[in-house]
Image (cartoon, rainbow, N blue to C red; front, top):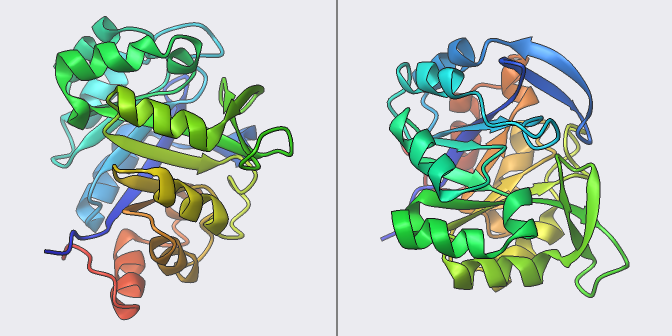
Length: 254
C-alpha cells in the first residue's frame, strides 16, 4: 500500500511569535503561532512542525505554554523542536501536547541522547532535525550545522543521518540552509542522497516557493514536504499544494 505524502507547515518561533528569514537570518514577524497552526489545520495540513529557532542559541528551553496552546487548537500530529537537551525535556513536551520531538544541536554534542530518547519513548517520537549546508570539507558535499544554522560542524550530513538512524531516530527532517527562505525550490540532490541512506521517512525542507516545487521533492525521495513562508504569507494554501501533487500522480490525504 502506498503511503500518502504529508504536507507540513512549519512554525519557526522566536519569543512567542512566528518568524521567517532567508538562510536563517534577518528574521521578521509572521504572526501568532496558535492562530497560524489553527488555520493550517483547517486547510488540511497533515502535521504541524513547531521549531523554537532561538532556544538553543539563547540556551533556554522551548516555550512550553505556546506548545500547549497550539496543541489545544490542532488535532493532527505536532512535532516540536528547539532547545531539547534531555529525555526529561521530551517527557515535558509530550505532556503539554507534542506528538513528536525534534532534536538537533544537543544530539550532535551528545549522540547518546538519541539512544536515550528512542529507548524511553520509541523511535516514532524522535525526529532528527538536520540543518545542512553544502561544503567541500566533507565527502558527501553536505555538512551539518547547529544553533539554527549559525555554527558549522565537521560532521558529514549523510554519515550523521546513518548513525542517528542506527541509534533510534524514527524520521529525518532535512533542511537545506542554502535554500531556506529563498523560494527557489528544494535542494533535490540533498533529498535524493538522504533517501539513499535512510531507512526511515525523510521530510524535505527549505526553498519552497511555488506549487511546482513540491512534486520534484517527492519524486527525489521525500516522504513529506515542509514549508513555512509560502504558507505564512498566504501565497499558497495546503490545499493548493495537495492539488499540485495529486496532479503529478502523488498520493495525498484528502
